[in-house]
Length: 214
Length: 138
Image (cartoon, rainbow over all chains, first blue to last red; front, side):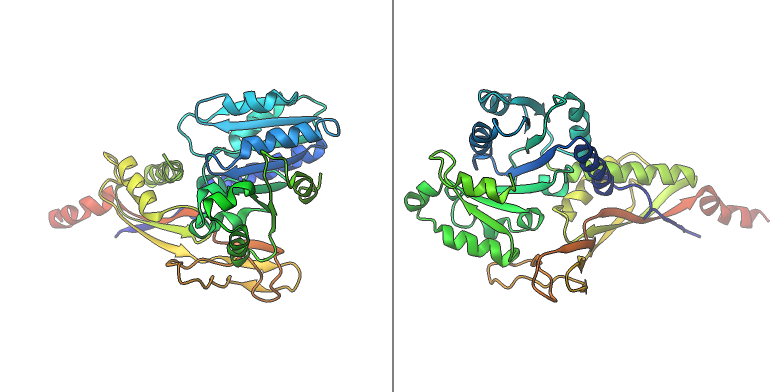
């Protein structure tokens, strides 16, 4: 007789990650650290946004930034140039940050940190399955990724608390309508707050800071 | 490399651990459940799982999977059930809208559909393999 062995209660990777994320969230709360995870494709503008936010907010908050990338320190170096504490996490070949990686980074944060930005690996799919325990998850898209960016990757917006459409100054050149992108986002998550910005031209940043509750 | 492989590694570990615990000589079938709200491609998970189970007691197992639809609870109106699908002719897959089907607001708690697990495995033990011979001897 073949025997059926039930494995439904075995620990699954995604469930384990969510439990760890919950712990991280509690730890951050206890330390009085607000936390935001930035997700988005390579080139969407995550690093530029974090540079500009860091520059604007560093007098009001003690900011630490964890920057995830496969191999380089480009992101951490760029953000670090604005006088905030940055820590590069090189994931090697892994396509996303996970709660386990973050839990090891938390002890490195300067004790007076009260605002933590996490820049996820440039990827619009995998990071969504791995919450990191942050208060908010932000998804960044940009008009240079074309008019179908949202329609082609709709699910990640379900995970997000705030969506950012970046590089609005290039919308005309790209023949992309930001209104259409907003409509696409709202078709997936009707009450998601969408902020249209140009990080490079520093437009819409105050609105973004408000939407992030900072 | 996408995260399908990380997920498959966890599954392979769980399968081989259970097979050893149950003293399986062969795993005949592996049943997977893939949540609708995961960002995983089931075909890729299965591909990696087969690779990872090569040269093990589970190398010939048939891998079957089913999709677990999302189930949510709304903290505002108390709705509990599935999400509705987005209506867009460009979408060829059933894509859920992240708003409460009851009140159209967004304060949803996800109850089901975020996991990707091994539901069960079907195994053969030494007894299963050798019992026909035993009966012949008697």
